[in-house]
Length: 225
Image (cartoon, rainbow, N blue to C red; front, side, top):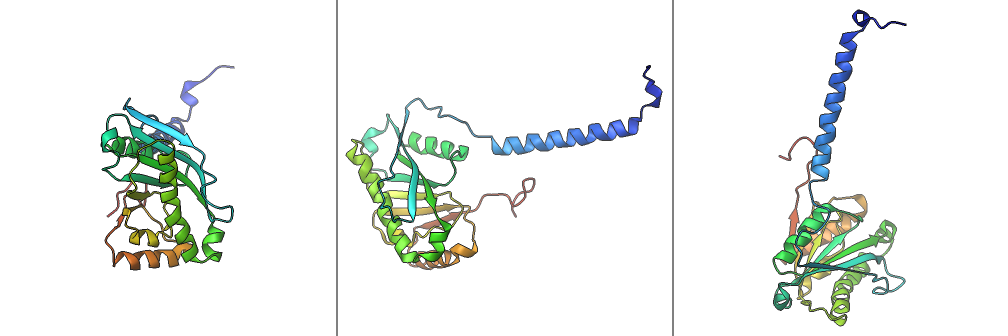
């Protein structure tokens, strides 16, 4: 069977090629935005330690720590007790933006505790918000105390950076003398955390510790206005 090049539908071929090129450009754009961060630390002085802190909270607690890691720098050990401890709260296993933030903080002389928390939405709606707030107020000092007992020099003063994208009940932390700031990155308002959001914003009017950062694009190809 011979192939007749003159009977090929070149218009259809051109359309297919154009569609494939468009899909390729879209794929490159998405991958560039999603994987623009490094997978590993480039600073050789950065030290990362992973621990299992399931026993920090009681069994009846609404908050469970799936994974905890302490990242420090061997260069700035004398400044450990001067600068506050950075506490990063996340829900996802891998987030390359957090790796970049962690390395930047450690390079500047901060100690960084990264906590991957599991918080039940059912508990957020059924249990009293005040009870969950007390659990959060106890969790972070307990984690810092755990690492200090392990021989690390961490400041009791801390800054919370929340990247879970939900409003967590952190109102009591605004009144904690050891908590210097609470930074929420791209928080999302949902029906189950509406009361939490109202309480947090109300308490923030009395205390200027709360900072909210909105940087996500509503559409992957257009910037926020």
